[in-house]
Length: 462
Ligand SMILES: [Fe+2]
Image (cartoon, rainbow, N blue to C red; front, top):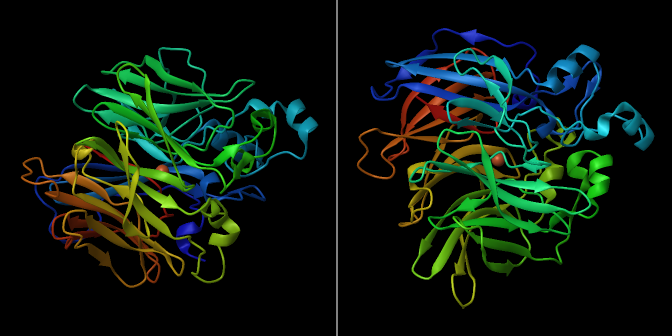
């Protein structure tokens, strides 16, 4: 089994990592990352990688030196499960109770997991850990200690919300996509302006079968919801029934539908249907001529969910059934006309861009390379203009999400560095890899003496 899918039992910190190479003088700040890291509670095991208890990581870079610390997010689920040695909350794919009566009498049916193990965001001056349930769990970015749920200045009704909010720097407004399940299901976006904590809902739609929503896209004038045919047939069953993701059904006969809304008024501008695909991640979207262009990492179906059950990831060899992905560009006409689809690249995940180019006609994106033989074993830089792509690969190494940090005096889109936490399976050591984002050549490596569990997403904060 890859050590990256094993549990970390105890948090630790390292004051000074051994650094090879030279870290750019301008690169000072913290790489904050999140991910599942503990998969057993007492004698019970979680079933899915996305169930694992959240571990916050911090690589601090200052004057060419690197320190590291980690800390489990002290969520309600983490506290209670650890104290009781059993599962107490409904999680992504693990069922803590035996049947409907037990669920109701235990009060479990309304206890969404607060194990925010997917991403990190800064909301105003608050650092929060995010998952797809309504609670944003605030933590201290200095100590990584959990502060509690962020208290929003509203009473929005939320069943799920994505862990990939967008921020529009021009208007200093953040956006996110909400699903609300019940007798009448609905989806809406909210906007959060300035440093306030009052979320204003807009672009609401009734939906009979809510789709699984992991991310969405914005352009300068539009906000786009992507309804994939991986949907809830009976949302009441979801409220009272099986673990979250097992309520979703894949139907290849149905289409994927892009709903395009005006970002200011919330008015539905257009709906576009394309053949079925599954996705976690939108890469970027922008307006060009008469089209809205939206780039998405697509899968043929939802089997990736099955691939990421721990019984598949923790096999005796490194062969993990990771399905093929396509970086797919959809050109949606703003007026009349046909939708055009273009495949730009194959087999990448965890896409990141220079976020200053979000909503813009961008050129570069970065990701981890995936394939069925050894899951993710290289980093990729995709050049959408020249189609001359670059990779970073090292024997026995498994890199995590590549985070782009711009040079403060950047002269081009790829003027900056890529930060990725890499696990060397052979030496059982993790390291922070710093690549020149332009040449994709190694600038520096800061090595820990220990392995880290694979993470999901993170941010660089100064
Ligand atoms: Fe994600």
